[in-house]
Image (tube, rainbow, N blue to C red; front, side):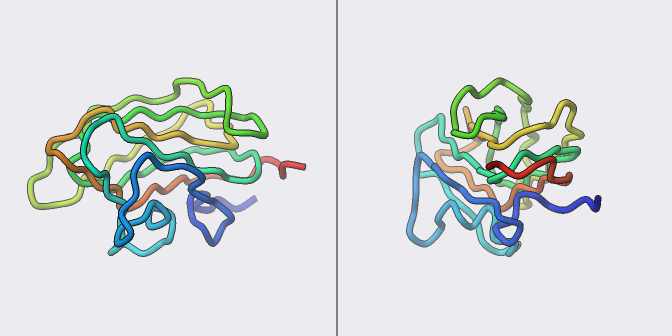
Length: 143
């Protein structure tokens, strides 16, 4: 099986929840494949979003492109509904003044149907997520 970016809307991924939304920078921008678009928080933390894959996937590598994110938690679920999330990854990101943060994570035990990304703190009042890339393979369809 070929490895693909599972977090693209063109691969069937969908952002099913976001705690904030700006009409100019909606959460769908995270998975649209366009490096120029982004989702922005609207102040106050934590902020979160959930990505649904609509199938069970095996994630081997994550790349998060963001701006002003300080602490990021990632939880995963293998349920058919977005419930029973378990803590998976937690990272403190480095502040990169004037350029995007590019956080690469080699994933262990990466089976998931949903991922919940929780920004628990930021370097400013607002933070932005440009993209989430999840390299891996589809393990099975949800039926």
